[in-house]
Length: 182
Ligand code: SF4
Ligand code: SF4
Image (tube, rainbow, N blue to C red):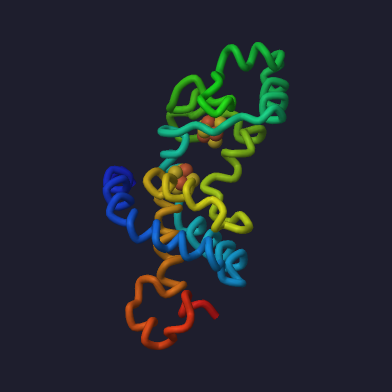
């Protein structure tokens, strides 16, 4: 996993141009079955990958904390929300609550999250590859493929399934922007 994580930023950089073009097309005309496809790709990838050998999201980027997250997690620690905020959080340039530092304070040396059951919504949903209308978070996804090997693999598989990676598909069906989508 270490080797994969070391190589990931460079691989993401190399794919950036193709990804930009791909997501621009996807945004303009999302295929009808995109939600189903994303669900399928997400499930397939997360059956293969073991996040406990990785934890790169928790190590390199923190989640944003909603008011509900703050309320739930501070209750878990039997702290007042304000006390929790002052101890662990800061406000970023978008005026969101984020961690004061990364790796995340709640990440253990064994890569387990010490607040797993009450963790922020953003952690539960990362890397958002099974969300509906996936085309709407393309900018975020382009950042995430440099951090998360699962997101990288999902986007690469997406491009294959939608025909971007196979030049013969354009000959097979020149009218379709996504020749491989059934
Ligand atoms: S979600 Fe992605 S970055 Fe986070 S631990 Fe799993 S594979 Fe690694
Ligand atoms: S709260 Fe847990 S899941 Fe979220 S970044 Fe921290 S360690 Fe990772």
